[in-house]
Image (cartoon, rainbow, N blue to C red; front, side, top):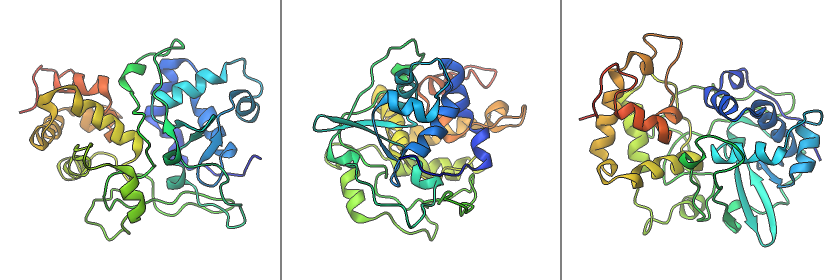
Length: 287
């Protein structure tokens, strides 16, 4: 059953979603906001493209399976299976929605109860190979951290907290629940220092837009870069990478009406362009 959701003004300035729509040629912005109304209070929905299309894009002549695929490969939604049934979840849902207390509890299984699908490159979309998704069960929260959970909007209420507010790990925000921390990262197999990388971003580039949460999608992008080359597998490299970015007028917003977001900086294809100096006017990797 569809639910009433609200939207923040900042949604219309979502640069990564705009670029994804431009690259794919699909109406991703309307579809993504439409999925909020089709999701339960945990941001979960049944993976039924035909039915979802009726709720999100009833009049558009578009294959909604491709729309879902484009959103999945770019980390806006996650597809997972529990038994023989397929579901989807919006990782950022609880960041931006305050749920009416009268709304019933979710009856759909959580992602960690099944396995997350690794989307293949297809459907005429570009750059899908840059968004590889692990099959390991994940939850929406990141590795042990103290990033603040921003609350969004609910029925008839404006969301608490400002989108774009910078939050560091040293803020007096509540820590993530212990059981979520344990489910998210298996420390024996995943040694990527996600939180240290986020802390470097917060301290080295305080002028850039905020990051409120180390989501599953962000973990995945960082991990893809970390595993792609041994020289990227050190905290020192990432410190140099963020220092390198400071010298780019374009990325820092000093030359045009644009500032690079954290998601822009950890996008696989853009990451390589940045370290090669394509946004600096000169070539060269960070020290």
